[in-house]
Image (cartoon, rainbow, N blue to C red; front, side, top):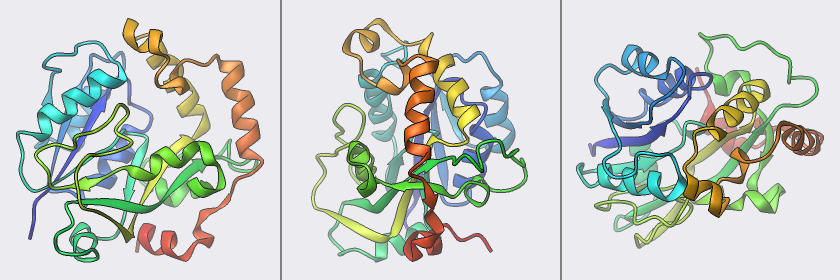
Length: 258
């Protein structure tokens, strides 16, 4: 069986990090985390849940910004072989089995894209629900929209499972230069953009104060730059549109937890 390695960067990730690690340690053989100095318990959480994963410091880009993070991820990917995937900690790979994902596309495929992206959004009925630490997040939170429902989110459609030396990403890792590519009906991405809302809102404001000057000047990663009031206004708009994503049979099968 091929080896699967997951890559991510962490900066103040405590609210979602336990759920993210528990979810992905069952799918991937190994993980590599580019760790940026955080003001919360992220480091202890990683060491507790995934003690065998690699925690590395940034090699060249020591302040958090989109282009720098992408470069750091590619540096780490280059050190590993097999199938690789880079996700933010707000993004969950949704599938039952990565081996089945690889087998679902043509043999010469080197870059596998998800069937769709589920953008997780709390509704007015679920926004105040308490999270249970022992229950998978995908079980507790399953409302939102698919990327096709809201055109501004189509960029998340291109998170990749690839077997290249590195992902050859553009800024934001929304596209890869690796060819040939194919979509797998067995793979989805759940992007926790607006759910659980209280935790996401808090994290965005915490990260905002630690961004590099380049990040601020280029205004990349707009979601970290808005004010709390702007964030609440955007949430109100998308929350009114959200529905139960388990109504999509493909997503429900991929996210099933027996």
